[in-house]
Image (tube, rainbow over all chains, first blue to last red; front, side, top):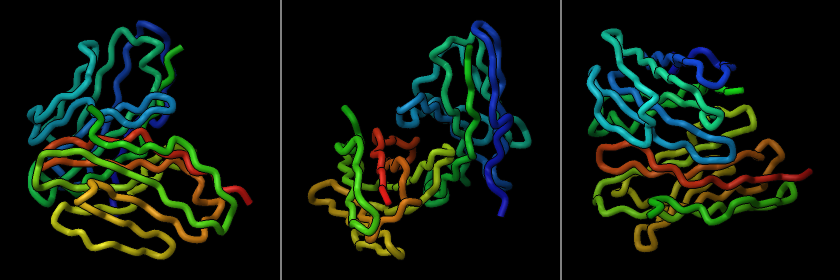
Length: 116
Length: 113
């Protein structure tokens, strides 16, 4: 079965650079979530989208922005990168934002971002 | 306040021992969902189980079992006859009626041969 795809899997950037992470949800899934997991930390919710509209917002820095496109894939744009942005970034997808379908939240393999 | 508490930061056991990972959650919603994920050193989050707030039946899957008790807001996870391959960080997570996941801080399990 198709899973959530994230690209790239690994990314190395320097301070003050920009990074774009991509997430391709499971086919037919219309909701995407982004999480950030720092070293030794638990995943922290950043932002989510349902039907291409932002549905919820967590601890996402102002330097970050995200959107969901017409094909339901999502991109997380990170500017003015800082050392503290080094983390594993997970994308998850679900069918629907509320109700039973939303609980089948499938996580991608993550993108490991290293900021030097 | 932390919505999901995993008080055990790290546990070490010897292979074939049983081990229980504790999870305590906090929510005011009547409908919510609890999850356990395994995160091996490779980093991916591996889904283990999902439980909704209306289903307090305990579940067993092979060497894994889960004990959900609403009265104590706990959702504990037991591995029977642990194996070295069980070594990983285990996260308990809560999802309220319609919202993102709240993860606990994780419990690192070391299973020694």
